[in-house]
Amino acid sequence: MKLINSHTLEIKKSKFIAYYYEVDDASEVKDIINNLKKEHKKARHIPYAYKINQDMKKSDDKEPSGTSGMPILNIIQKNNLNYVLIAVVRYFGGIKLGAGGLIRAYGNAAKEVIKID
Image: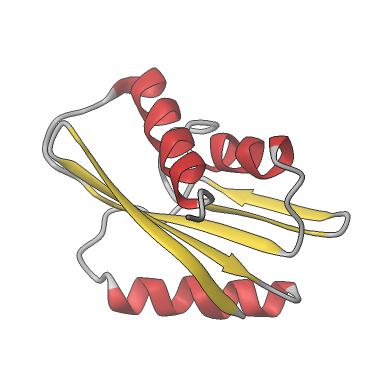
């Protein structure tokens, strides 16, 4: 497992911290998510998506269904990424973004974190 990049977005006082990892198998994904949960104890949600060959999984982590894991997975698929995990840590800022706002926020966080200079 290797952290490739991270990127932070702030949208309506909520903070979205995206992490882009290179992973070899699903057990690494579990370890990374557990470590992020320990590191970001006060974060409200840590949705993620990964693709390892044909094995793909997404999690909304208690965000409304389809508003976080799916936009992340869409970015992975559109960019033909493989052996990757993108996780986005969200610190809630007190202003609800709505389903469309969440989809844009998580999608943009994933899009930005895969941009390597």
